[in-house]
Amino acid sequence: MDELFAGGEKRVLLRGLIILLTFSSVAYAEEQKPNFAVGLGYGLLERKSLLNIDFKVNIPINDYLSTQVLLNSNYLITGSSNDSFAQSEFFSNWFISNQYARLGVGLGVSELEPMDEDVKGEREVIGQFTGDVFFDEVTLIVNTQSNQATLSNITSSRLGLSYYQSENVRFSLYREKYNDLDTGWRFESYYQPEKYQDMASVGVIVRTGEKYDYIGAVIQYYFDYAVPLQERERHFN
Image (cartoon, rainbow, N blue to C red; front, side):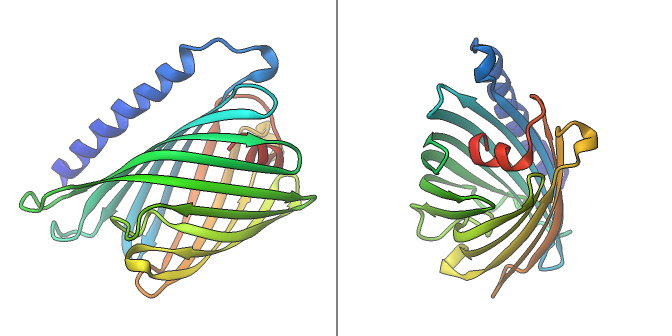
């Protein structure tokens, strides 16, 4: 288990450093500040512990174009080397948006590193398309990825909608495709308390599927400036 986390932590630190260098090496106008976020999540995947660590930098280029660097690292901890693993996804995404919609394309690499030293790790190049359409308090969402069967349950394509009860409270429902073309439902809710100056949010995620039932929680912190959750997710994340 220690070797699993050692290899995973090295990848997280290296890619986190790349993100930080990207964040700090470019000068931006005052109105085009980047949005830098880190997230930590924990849940149960089929009664097995799943830890999630995210780093994300959203970089506005102008009023319509932005880019994103994303690192998503996951650790499935089962107590056995046979099915424990560390998985990471490293993406570069590009978006074009206005007040009505946002379209994005991305290219990334997904890596799976089993704890069992006798099992070879896997790597997969993934392309993706995302599209959001905005209707006042409702957002329609589509995300599709080029992979036919993912390395684990982590990566998925989805179709769904989000409803903002207020500018800092969101409820979402998605239909998702998982590993081996398994499909299921995903419900999540996020809340960004104003008393923390709109700099942090908490979320709850429930996911159902033939093989991939999951329940968990996530905390995100934003190293930027006060922005309501609805505006942040539509124009930054």
